[in-house]
Image 1 (tube, one colour):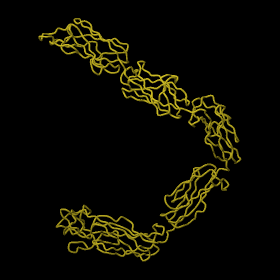
Image 2: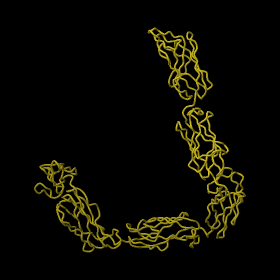
Image 3: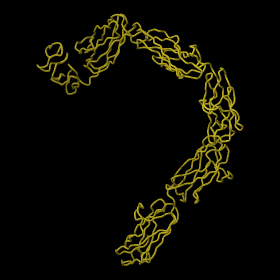
Image 4: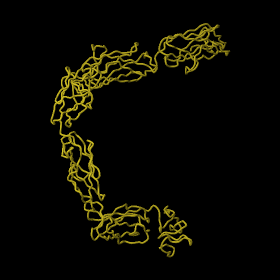
Length: 612
């Protein structure tokens, strides 16, 4: 806004109205204008005075409206023009186009302002072109940009760039004439759309990328380039079935030379032939028999079912169409459908931990062995199974069978149960089971079981187990003495898992009862660090493990102080006279200090201040 107070500081008397446009006008954005009363030479009045009510209006075919708010939230037809400060008027429209602002006042006359409402920022970039074309065809296209309100983009200064990763060329003409380029950059025109043409030698989905330079807005369009000629295919290429049964679905499809799927045009007639030759629209072979298919326009495939005869053998199924050629499928028809499964070669009894081979075979209605007839899968359960002939590593609980398979072979093992029930289930809807009684294997060695790390002066449990030569836990056939020993300072071993850690010992004699698989013991380590713990059996040899202990706090009988607090345990402990003592009312367990005359030992007697 030009102008100011006139010389000498004299008041400037306004005599007319003036408009000023302060921002780029966009149809979908509130655009601010100012309206002021000025003097004849353009000076702004310098004297304060009462504002003047000025009528304002807008003339536009773009659906424009005026507002007194920056959000364009309400329409106005009059504004107050201050004597010294211009008034704000806001304009918005439904679409781009010209508009004329008019302000009038009895004393200051009429002021008009012509403006051009443009589009908002780009919000969509739309491609119009064929979604599919033959390789090498010239495909015309159009790109149109719109703003958030759907207005055509009329903002000048934009450059549209088209590119693709495919081996393709762009043309500014619609018929692929004139200069060609792998990247096309053209000024975005006032007509709000760009025409071009596209030719590609890359089969499959071609992604065309469009970018508006000044805004950075991008969008893409997929066009699939197919490769002529087209042909007919049948799937599956091979099929299996039983005599006098329905096989399906078979699917007839149209593909291009690159084996990409195509849609039918609607005029194709596919003739079906072969022996057997009873075809049905329904894959379940219901309804009336047919001899041809007529896929509707736009369909990607057409399915049908086939009923096979009572004679086993291999048959050729064909489908042909005048423009697409012929396709075929091989059909193998086997004997009667299996109706049952049977375990073969599986023992009635065995030993846990040992591997045994076995098979499951198919039976027909007469109980005679037969083939699967169709590809299927056999699944096993009830034990550990392997289907590769071995009995180690990760097991396999299922086996894929071909149509000509008559049985499924496996190896099984069970390590824990005294008896098992083997089960076999086929995807043909058949199942069977067999019980196998498994006895315990004879003992072969001993081993430690359990965790052997903890905190000093605390009690933990462990066990010594009997195992077979296969490494599975088994039971003693007689009372089995075991000596537990180790030169571990401050250690305690006891043979009863329910006893408290009371008696210090470097060794203890234990025994595994007849029919039992293990003996439990209690261990406690009084010093931090690691040490060896060993077991010895005159019948089954030696075993060893490592015991480790840390000392984050002191337990029963432990010395305590500022740097070594008593552990929080049951019963609770407190540091008293440098020793951790119990701090509860009730009886004291073995090894615990007597906390007062009212407390008795839970078992045993008090010796001095300690329960023995």
